[in-house]
Image 1: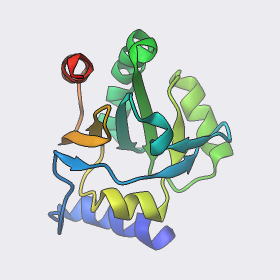
Image 2: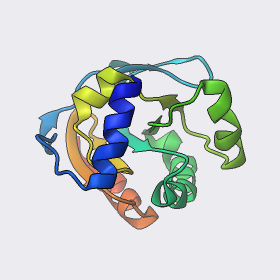
Image 3: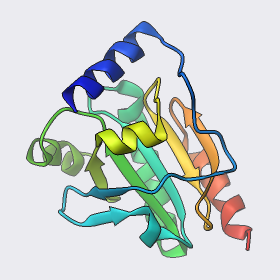
Length: 163
């Protein structure tokens, strides 16, 4: 894990282009993560919802800047079928990450990155990187860089309206 995270940091700072990337309109890779609360987060259990998978880090200024928008959109749309999964690429324990999550009022589930999800969704060449998965489990949007509230809301509304 440390080698993977170290490579990610080196790749980000060197501006390396991804060797391959997930593109929209492909099935989202399955994942099972353990949230900071100890709950299991499995993509298979979120079918029928619009799922936002956001790779981020505490030391990343654009990541920190987008958190309030993610929280607001999540709170407004959770009951309407939105699920956000924050995947932290920080090298720390859940106990070390918890104060940051609490301070930033991150009400959506947060988990630490695993080699598997990083490999399956990567290579990730920048953070934040966000994937939006439709109700059928298809990646419909992938974006490197900060995502604002309007973009997130518009994509959720569009995908929610689909049958």
